[in-house]
Length: 329
Image 1 (cartoon, one colour):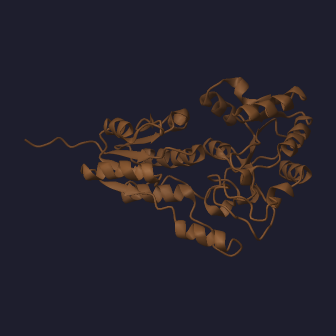
Image 2 (cartoon, one colour; image 1 turned 90 degrees about the horizontal axis):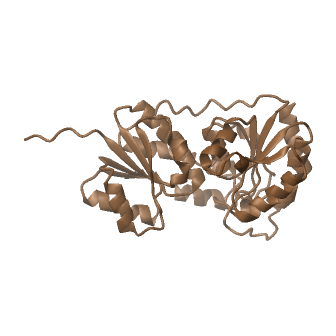
Image 3 (spheres, helix red, strand yellow; image 1 turned 180 degrees about the horizontal axis):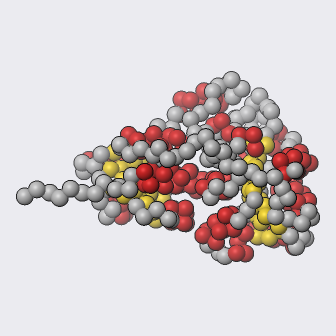
């Protein structure tokens, strides 16, 4: 008796970080649309499920990466994948993809280009730009035989001239090398809000919320995006209404990119040419100081070897505000 032909089902592994999962959602949406007879499931943080909505053959399987691997594997097996694409390439995903490989499932993995990253950090001023992360994800899926020609790379998300009525500001970042002094972003937000513009603040931690509530208390045009609702879907709904997002090198830059919203981004120890720039964002909309030591870190986690973090500390509120005004007018 012949076995029935199974519908191809690609299981993709990407357990964190939120910005990387957002980039993966862009690629997988294009791949799912270009391959309507194939199912695609990403195993990752359930919080980001709204990014995967709207495409009938694309799903997100919520995975708690803190669970024992045997529990995670048991959950992943229920998908019955015909292919596995490891878009994370860390120890945990290596173990899981190996388990699928040993059970006879074809497996491909992300090649991060670690050698190119080391070359960039060793010679930041002269090393070539790295391949963008979304393109690495795309290449990984192509190894399984699933192409995504509709993933347009070159058409930049347009930024309309002002006056802008709704500006998003994501003033925080996890890593020290990506953090601009919060009081300076407050100055920028306050000045923009006094120009008859609604400013929506994005952030989540207790300390971040305390900062943002204090800013909003001092200006009725500054509001918390979280006030629209406590879940991620509500914040995405706010992002969709923005004229522009001003963001650090953080997940919110990628959330806005996924929604087709133009972003003005602020960079310190990291650099757009390291491969994590917002999808379809204009390279000229990256605010950064020209320093020979940048980038000194791919993810912003390494301590500043000079001990000064001058890439962020020397960037003034006036410089950022003036740039925003220059592209607005």
